[in-house]
Length: 153
Image 1 (cartoon, rainbow, N blue to C red):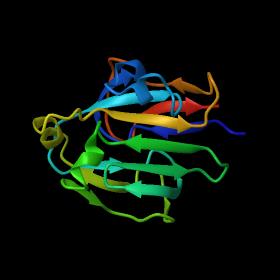
Image 2 (image 1 turned 180 degrees about the horizontal axis):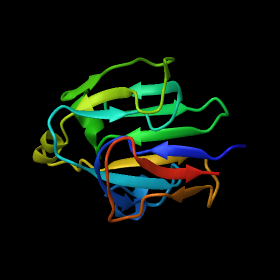
Image 3 (image 1 turned 180 degrees about the vertical axis):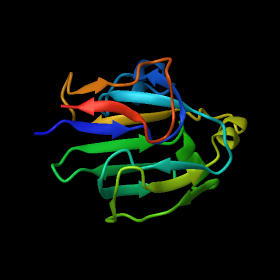
Image 4 (image 1 turned 45 degrees about the horizontal axis):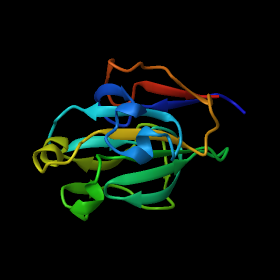
């Protein structure tokens, strides 16, 4: 299977998953990856980290699956499901085929933070084995949306 490059879905500072304030992500129960502390820009665009099909799409989270079966979860903030979609604009639909870098959702990370929730965005390889994902960016780095974040071998 070819190496899959996973792009940063948002601009921000790279964090290790252990820094995510949610035990499901910090313990890698969903899978390995990295997280991003997003740049607090209103109407910030969230892009697809890989090309593939949108398997699941909620205003606060989405899963895109590559043609080879590997899938990436992008979760926009922690406890943002409680917002019921408020503050998020969805630009595609489940079952849509997307290209790397295509806008999937827009949101306002600063509004999420001002509401008392963490805007941190885990980017996780679903059902990835230990060591399958390697960080291209490192915790502490600052990346722009669309820059390489992870490598999935």
